[in-house]
Amino acid sequence: MQSIYLTHARVVLPDRVLEDSAVLIDDGVIVAIAPDGARADQEIDLRGQTLVPGLIDLHCDAIEKEAEPRSKVLFPLDFAVAQVDRRNAAAGITTPYHALSFANSESGVRNNETAAQVVRSVRAFRSHSLVDNRVHCRYEVTDATSLPVLQALMDEGAVDLLSVMDHSPGQGQFKTLESYLQYMIGNHAMSREQAEEAARAKTRSKDGAVQRVETLLAHAHGLGIPTASHDDDSIHRIATMRNLGVAMSEFPITLDTARAAVSCGLPTILGAPNVLRGKSQSGSMRAIDAIRAGVASCLCSDYQPSTLIAAAFAVAAQTDLTLPQAMALVTANPADACGLSDRGRIAVGLRADLVAVAQVGALPLISHAWSAGRLVFSAHYPASRPTMPAAEPRGLVAA
Image 1: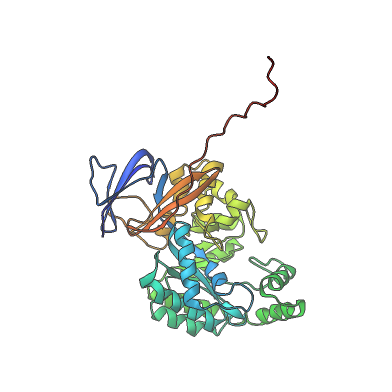
Image 2: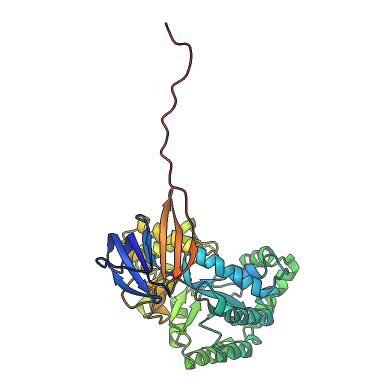
């Protein structure tokens, strides 16, 4: 592999920013920062752009829309995986955890059989991938049939993160029955009658959920797979999930639950789209409020990969966090949460997962992305043109 010398960059380190600096890459690893007189096979002048670690996204279900862009319209899964791989490279996400839900009562990509096929398709594509694609399996606790499917996938080594969630109406994301019905009608093309029956079925299926969760989490822990809870809506639920051994809390519903999670050692994961939009799509707390309160550990792209880098820069602009601290929400902190000690920071000896960010108007946009030292995305935005002075009006000239 070629050595690469990235020069004239604004380099974001864990604790400071180096202006007009450089990074040397060799054999896929960062070998020097701000070296004097370095030589390499290739030199790239970043012209003042900001160089940050490759982004780590612990939860993004965009792969589901690539596989099923419209309700009950499934694309070939290898094609879907290839497309989401390209999307992540362009978004600067060098370690995406593709979030796939297992809820057998639902049709389409969340059906157990189809979801398992997507997981295996991601694994099969890894040798061709632009980025380090990983799998985040999401277990719906009301579905007893998912248990053996997920255990088999874990035994195959196809699961990198497991979360447990309860989307039954009346708690978590769906605080009311009506919010659940509207979601099922809007997202799954159900009639109101079908959505009401789905709600009744989900409520009936909660019997035995605790035992299933205990079994599944124990299986994951035995294989060293990190685990998370989802949509925690009370301090009691945080305590329960912590006692079951989960390692992180994604999308806590309120500031109090986020505080409870952090106080007992659980990193929290919140949505980058929430930061950009200034609100939650389901009426939960604003992510920016949790960040300002010091109880947000990580940001994830949730369903839109391109939001992750934009949200990190928005945090730096809207809070007291420094740029290194804001970038840690999408790099170092997710790496630590999942035990990825080889990435997440610009430091000598770590993987050369790096992203160059150009300022295009008011937007921070990815211009280059390297995954383990390999250039996987490049875009060249036209330089801003200076505003031309207004031409003087032409008319009759006095003699």
